[in-house]
Image (cartoon, rainbow, N blue to C red; front, top):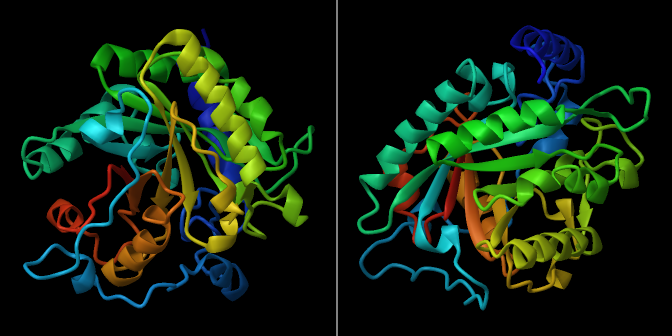
Length: 336
C-alpha cells in the first residue's frame, strides 16, 4: 500500500497542477483551480446556471395552500438507501481543500466526522426518516493539460481509493466514487472501480461537465456532456453488479447545472437496479439554486433529487432547515 508520505507528495503535485490550470474553481460544480483570482468573463459565462423555471423560492417551499410536492416515479427495484433515508455527504479530493469539503479535514476520519456532523443537522429535522452520513470522493480529477495519455485526467491510485472505502466501511458510512472523465473512456473508468462497486455501501457519481472530448475542447474551456447511450451503458453495468452480488440498488449521481450537460436524457432507460440521481450542481443564492433544483433534480428523468451546497460560493448558504423545507426535499445533499 502506498505510504502516507508518497500519498501526501502526490496530493501536493496534484494541487500544484490544479493551481496552474484555468480559472474555473470558483464556478458551478468545478474542481480545477487557478492561482489567478480574476474570473475571466468568458469562463464565467460558461458556468452561469440557467434560470429555466420562472418560480420564486417561496413557491418551492412547503406552505399551507402552496404547491404540492413533485411526485417521483415509483420504482420496481429492490431496497433503496435514497428511498428510506436522506443522505448527506462531504465532497472533494483528499488533501486538496480548494476542491471541496472532503479534502479539508486531513484524511478519512476527519471527513467522516464532518459528514456525521452535517447529517446530524438533517436528522434533527427529518422526523422518522433518518439522515445518513457519506463521503463523496473524486477519484478521477479533470486536468487542464492532456498528460501522456491525452485524457486530461489524473486518476487516484486504486490503493488510495481502497483506503477511503475501507474507512467508510469501518465507520459504517456510505461512499460515492466520482469520475470526471476528461477525454477518457467513461465505461473503462467505471470498470476500474468494480472491486469497490461490488460493495453495497459504495455508489457512483459521474460529472458530465468535464466530459469534453465530444465538444473538442479542454476541460474548463468548454462544458462537457454525457449521452443517454453512455449513461445507459453504465446503468447496465451497475445492474449486473447488483444482480450478481444481491445488494440493494445503486445510486448513479449525475451532476448538472445546464441542460446541455445531458444529451437526450429522456432516453435514459428505466433500470430497476439503478437510481438515476440528478444533482443540481450550480452555485449561487437560494433563488437560482432552487430554480435549478426544480429544472434538473426534479426533471422527469431524475429518479431521485440531489442538491449541492457550496461553502465558499453560495451567498447565502442555504441552511439545513431551508433545504428540508422545499416542497420536495432532496434525497441526497452534497457539501462542497
